[in-house]
Image 1 (cartoon, rainbow over the protein chains, first blue to last red):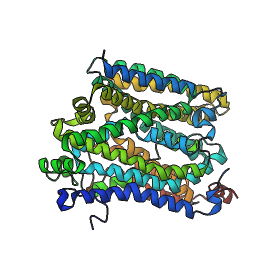
Image 2 (image 1 turned 180 degrees about the horizontal axis):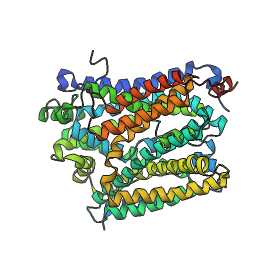
Image 3 (image 1 turned 135 degrees about the horizontal axis):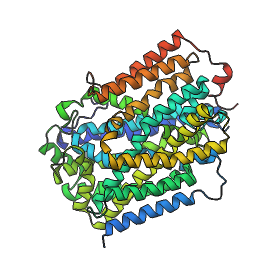
Image 4 (image 1 turned 45 degrees about the vertical axis):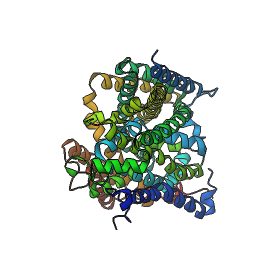
Length: 53
Length: 487
């Protein structure tokens, strides 16, 4: 649950999964956020997409 | 010859030339000077945003924070990315409203939306009070960087005086264009040096990133987890979550960041910016690694000396040329945000205090003249505080982020809820800012395991809603339509 919430919890060695937990934290914020925003940008209504005043 | 000093001086010199050249052949009106004529597309807006966001505090502070506190530093990765999500949805309607109403400053938004120059002036005062210490922090950071990379051959005061005297002049001349174009050089250097230092140093000393993490975990068990090595374990899970929430909401509430949004050519440029800025966060991760590496390689730094973790490690493990590059990049990481900050503060004073309160009949040319004069005044004041009594800003600085975030409830509610009233906004802002000052300066941060600024933000939001219910406004359909896309 703590892991799913994205809370860093790295007091483990590599063999115990410390680095994969860190990698998850990075994936959530640095990879999933731009991916989500790119998707949201594509799903916007046309008027919003072509917005030039 | 002191190679790091020469390289740092050359980099700062090139930046100053770029800053002056950014003026071009344009005849500058107030709109050109303060928001670059609202002409910036995706790339320049991205560079400008990164230039303003990733400051000397990020450059030195991220490594220092990792060094001092361990695991809690990962909040920085979270709040930055979350702030871009908020900006993706929040900034385009604000940009449309600003463009349709010819707004130039953050306080202009309050004046226009709530129909009161006094509300705008209050927003201007709060903005200036919290943003100027942030500019002073950049000055002090620059002084420390130059003194460290030159091994004390150039004093902190001399470095600040020269670099920021020149910065004040190029902002005076070129306005926002100076900040945007010097950002190009600053971002390029920052990326290069962070990649060099952030990859090379951990690998040099520990063989791999996982080797570094294992070594830190072995030497300081538990430090890489929340609450890390924070004093009394105060930076726990509650603090982490509330701080990520608070800082992501406050991210674009700094007057200079809010104002930079107005320089966008289209709302599409703003959304694209939000999509790509999270990638910049990878650089911060490398700075965390530098901080962790420094914990083992240059141990024993205490208090504010932890901010030197990066520079000490670079001086110890890299050749002088790299030290010079890092020094130059660090100096620009101070100069660019300081340029944007002083521009925002002086425009707030020129438009929302001088024009709106003192001389309503002032022409745009007169407002520009006054704003330009205040560039020099604000910079001189910051310089004086930084040199004469650096302790003076310590308390205000602690409250800066918490303080500017208090604009968030008013801004969000104003575009979602037409009943949001000036009475509610003023009451919320006064309660929020008052609580921030009382809690943070009074030493009650964290409060109940949460960031005190977040507690103030919740109180502010509740008061804003309650005040707007008690003394409601009713924004017309025409006003609400100004947030909507064309057509």
